[in-house]
Amino acid sequence: MKIVSLLPSATELLCGIGLREQLVGVSHECDYPASVRDLPVVTRSRIPPGLASRAIDTLVTEQLESDAALYSLEMDRLMALAPDLIVTQALCDVCAVSGNEVARALDRLPGQPRVVNLEPVCLDDVLATVDRVAEAAGVPAAGRCYGARLRDRIDRVGARSGAIPRSRRPRVALLDWLDPLFDGGHWCPELIELAGGRPCLGDRQTPSRRRTWTDLVDSAPEVIVIALCGFDIDRSLTDVERFFADPRFGRLWRTCRPRVYLVDGNAYFSRPGPRLVDSLEIMAHALHPSLHPLPAGLAPALAMNPEQTLENDHG
Image 1: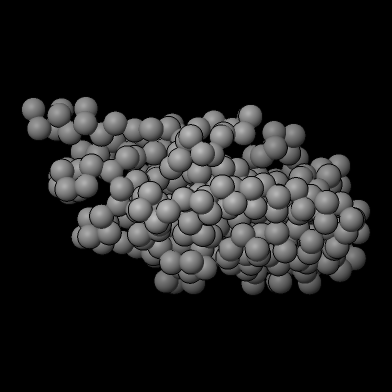
Image 2 (image 1 turned 135 degrees about the vertical axis):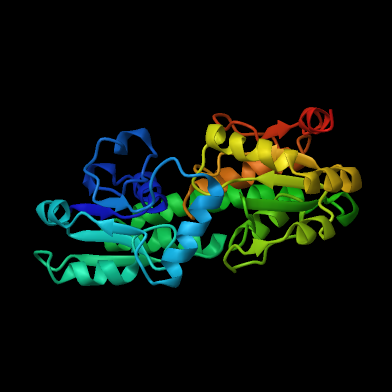
């Protein structure tokens, strides 16, 4: 079977099930595991590289309001690959090729490939996608086995957190974007709760929302986790420095003095795939390091110290 994945989380899932050799094409954002980086790329972004975060937000907003596509398919390459199965999504037009474009492409593809649309908005949905994809690829047993391993890791974290009294559960704000501010929605509040925290921004199974500084200050976070959608650590640091230098952060810092952590949003928290379980384990270790050990191979969340920036900003 020849499989094309149009989103990074599906590529990670397919490889986790053991279907790497069946993958023949991926999206331009598929970068994990490393073995997929040499596969033919069948999508492209219409967002110019190198834009500042505010400019990206403006462009994305304008494109969505005008119903213009942010991503497009490389149809000639996709037709040459002649896939039997295409795994895509209908959850977020900001994250991948739209479902409408995939539907239009089917009329031109040979052999009428099967299309699996993934729309996970919580951890249970993510685990259900494992079964759906494995079933579509003809390996249901491998899917059940892989899903059971992921579920076991989730349950282990949840069981340890279950013993934490409410008084020791910090108020946690997860930020998905910094300029402008966006909270972490969908699965993020669930991850915070399982990790032993209390989400103070973001709603379960609801898309990330634009937030004001007043929203953030009023939420009185004891912990801020910065996981910028699509950005690795190096790219995120540029925005984090500006975030710390903002006078409104100075007021927040004087009021709450939250612990601040930075994680690779491109790898963790943003993608609704298997590495959400990694994200849970990373957050749990950050919130309660003595209770939640960090599994081998995972890097801890980077603890940030805003004080140096604040001191420099105030002379």
